[in-house]
Length: 420
Ligand SMILES: O=C(O)/C=C/C(=O)CC(=O)CC(=O)O
Ligand SMILES: [Ca+2]
Ligand SMILES: [Mg+2]
Image (cartoon, rainbow, N blue to C red):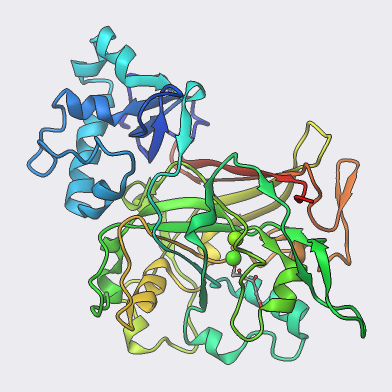
């Protein structure tokens, strides 16, 4: 029989007992931030569960990892501790387990409607890196930025290209994003202009949350890299295309991307995603040995982007795609990141890169969807080349199980006017 919780969970919910994603929340505005797990429309308060001594396995008994304001300490403990926590929580929430089910007082204290809580960044993010690992996205950007001849540079096929992003401006879903000002690509013979970006875009990505890190100087083997990944979130790598296009040669993106990056609050663990593993695309040329994996794994995660234009109350779908199109896998990205000895630390994140698929309706950013503004998009009465002030961008994603979904919830942000 399928695993079931004593808590009523709608079949369309992203958070059934098969998921159990981790986040950090405040039950009341004045409370201390604490770790929680989403179940249906509730958050299970792990501070309370730990305080009641219910984490009684060998690794978590007596640990203060759930008495922390972030998940860094827990994710650093590694997969055996994650497995133990998952087993404990799954048992506690199951329909056959009386401990919480039959204790109204304790239930009231430890299960809080998600609508009542404030979600915070789940980890203290020391570093954030962003990859460029979708072949469809790389091809389209290459044509738009550099022309039709060889849109994808040769190095792209040999290594997962990335740039170092800015951890300080990673924000939680729901945070407003101020339109950045900067130098824009010069038109004709004129010098570059300065002002609010006229080509503000979103980028549909997912980000991996690093679990145990690696010591400086000690690379992680690609076949062991999965043990360093706690789970995944949705990520919007907001991008100012006019600023980016002018500044990115030769060192890569800088101010065109560092003004804000939004992540969703719930980290879905690799354990929860395990039933949705699928084969990654075939790599040709074959990767160098340090990137050659025994098993190459992607995940079948349906992803959707909606835009709710300023002044409208309805959002329109602008893209439907899937995580499975990712060319360089998460484990290859992690192995490559550490191959020179660079250390990753618990709670760091790395973005996959924009997740464009092969179809015209599966593109991951407006630059591709409107072809750099040449083909404006019609959104139920509103037209867009790029984002306007007041537009809200909403990502969602889920895996389809048999009678349930393992989902990520949403990752949203509204564009605020530039600061004069
Ligand atoms: O092709 C380029 O020059 C740059 C493309 C991007 O903006 C991509 C980037 O941030 C990485 C990604 O999201 O795939
Ligand atoms: Ca990006
Ligand atoms: Mg960004």
